[in-house]
Amino acid sequence: MRLSSLSVLCALAIAGVSMPVMAADVPPPSVGPVLVIHGGAGVVRTGLSDAEAAAAREALAQALRTGHALLRDGRPALDAVVAAITVLEDDPSFNAGRGAVFTHEGVNELDASLMDGATRAAGAVAGVRRIRNPIQLARHVMDDSPHVMLVGEGAESFAQSQGIEFTDPAWFRTEKRWQQLQKARSDAEAARNAHAAVADDPLRYFGTVGAVALDASGALAAGTSTGGMTDKRWGRVGDAPVIGAGTWADARCAVSGTGWGEFYLRTAAAHAICSRVELLGEGVETAAEAVINADIPALGGNGGAIALGADGQMALPFNTEGMYRGWIGADGVPHVAIGRDDVAAMAPERADR
Image (cartoon, rainbow, N blue to C red; front, side, top):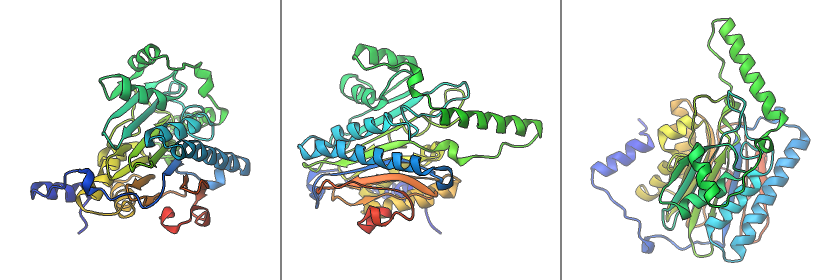
C-alpha cells in the first residue's frame, strides 16, 4: 500500500529521523542561474484560439527574459521571481492581476505570496482589490512589516503606507473572465431549478501564475499570484497566498503550485514536495510527481506545479490537458510550452515530466 507524502514524513518524524538544513549539506548548483515559471494548469486547447496561444507563449517568454536578465546581472533569485511574476500579472492571458477571474459578486480579489529559500523569509497578501501587482506588495510585507500575511483592506492600508501603486479595479477586468462568471452563475441557476447538484467545472480553479529561481550564489526563491476561482464566495482564499500550500522555498528546493487550491491546502503541497527532498533524499522530479500526480489526485484534486532544486534539477508536472510553463537557463534561451505535445520545446526531457 502506498503511503502519502504526509504519512511518510510523519513516520520519519516519529522515528526521530532528522536532516537539519545546513549550508554544507546542500550541493552546489551544477548549472548557471535558472528561472522556471508557470501560467496555470488546466489549459484546454479546444477553448484556446491560435491568437490566445501565441499571446500566452510570448508573455511567458517575456517573463523569462525579464527575470533572467536580473539573474545574469548577479541579482538574487527573489528579485527574478518578483520580476517574472509582475510581467505575468500585467498580461491578460492569465488568472492573476489583469485578467483575473471574478468573484460571485462580480469583483476581482487577488492573492500572492513570496518566499526566500536562503532565509525562509516570506510575505503574502490575500483578497486585495486595488493593487496592480500583488506580488510586489507581498515583497513589501516580507521586507517592511513584521508579518507574513496581510488580508483585504488591511493589506491595502499597508500598501498605501509603502507607496505601492494602486489602480482602478477596471484595470483587472477582461470580457473573457466576465463571461466565465456569467456561465458559472447560469449553470448554478439551472442546477437549482432542476434540484440537482452543480456540475463541477475544473476550469474555475486554474490560471494561477508562479515562478521559482536559482541564482548565481545557489540561493532559491518561489512566488505565486492568482485571482482565485471563478464565482468564489464568502471571502474564499485558496492555496496561492498560503506559505507551504501554494508556495515554498528553502535551501534545497523551491515550488509554486497551480490547481484546485482546496486540495493543495489539504496536502500542504508545496512544502510536502520540498520535505520529500529534505527527509527522503528524493530529487525534485520524484518528489513533485509523488505529490502532484499521486497525493492530490488521490483526494480528488488536480493541477500542476513547478519545482527547482539547488542542483539545478527542475520538474514541471501536471495532470490536466495542459499547463502554461517555461524555463530559461544560463544560455538565456526561453523554452515555453502549453500542451503535452510540446516536449521538444521543453528540452531537456526531464523538464517536462
